Amino acid sequence: MRPYAVRNQVQLITYPDSLGHNLTGLRHILETYLKDAIGGIHILPFYPSSADRGFAPLTHLAVDSRFGDWEDIRSIGSMYDLMADLTVNHISCESPYFKDYLEKGDRSKYADLFLDVDTFLLRHGAVYDALLDTHRPRPALPYTEFRFQDGVTRKIWTTFTKDQVDLDVTQEATRKLMKRFIGRLIENNVKIIRLDAVGYAVKKPWTKSFLIPETYEFMRWIRSTVPQHVSVLAEVHHGHRERMTILDEGVADYIYDFSLPMLVLHALYKGNVEALENWITIRPSRQFTTLDTHDGIGVVDVEGLMAPQDISFTLEKLREYGGNALDRASGRNAENVDIYQMNTTYYSALGEDDDAYITARAIQFLIPGIPQVYYVGLLAGANDVALLERTGNGRDINRHGYTLGEFKDAFGKSVVRRLTRLMRLRNSHPAFHGMFTQERVSDTTLILRWELDDLYLEGVVDVHNKRVNLEYVDPFTGRVKIQTC
Image 1 (spheres, rainbow, N blue to C red):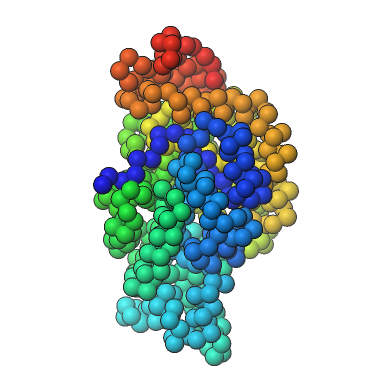
Image 2 (cartoon, rainbow, N blue to C red):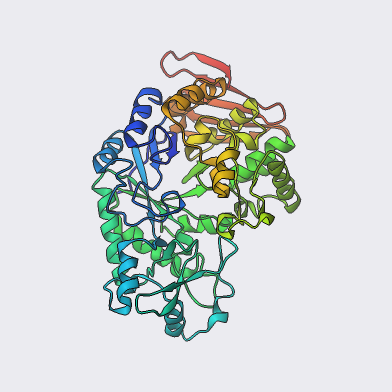
């Protein structure tokens, strides 16, 4: 059986409590306001969790009761292509598995799930110097000291934060637990499993412990474990060649196009499409395209695709528009600082310019891939500086929670109406199931065209004037329509 055929339609990314407080409120918004605008939804971790907005799960076997229950998940999954996270790299330090380990030490039936650094080094005949090359997402050591009930202190591997203890994915006990997690998701209508932070999952001395050969082997095991009718998406921030290798190796069905956000910003800031057009030419089509996510705008993802001076220019413009507003010199907790991403909403990143924003979304929708729109981006949300200052977490600048009333107000904005019209066209026009071509007609202008039999849809994208003109054959009347986004 072939992997599940993901609907070639726009998807929404949202937390379970960011649109209407819980899954019931989310379902109401989907059914009432977003009919035909999305074909899929990525609900960010809905499990009980102790930190990182769900990404420190206590387990994957339960839904946090504050959000709802498995019936809510099944219901949404019956209507849309539902994506859910499998946090393969770590689990919460508050999880029953780690608590049992803290209490019983090596006598715990869960002891093999976790990476005691000293035991790990002894196993490999290595010393602490062997960890110097370890790739870190944040400027902190990759381990945390925990005191066990017997009074002994042990260093436990924690790639991200002290709340997120890494799993030893080489152990049979860990893989049995992951099989249980995967089974629970599939039985509740999850069609796409997102491998969160999978690049960090396998550790090895004297390496970066990031996307090493053993990591690909682990992903291959995941792909063999997940039934073929369910798709696997690998979440990896890295250079484009390494991400493309994931597809070449066949260890996942899809990857993210994390290069696109910076390239689109650069094109709109500079009024030049050269670097963007080059990427569209060489990029694989089996990608989920994003401009914004719950994390930030990736910088490492464009290395080799943009000249260093162009990356620097784009980052300076992002800071000018409020990106990375958390002052790194302020003494804030280093765990709250990203070293490879810019924290901002995409609307603010474009100076809250409606025309620039719609141009960016049109580029995303007109290139091959499954487009995803983050809930703040759906509502053209600006940087939430108040939330950022309250929490001190850089990513919270892009994590505003909307009440139903706030959603209604934002949904009525002109820029949001323009965006949702574009989303509905992207979902409904048959040409997007056909052949894609592109042409750069000047330094400022791209033509992006789709053709299927006698139908076509063509977008002329002018990044200097921030304008997109569409021409397409109406599939119902056969007439040619011309419109500006």
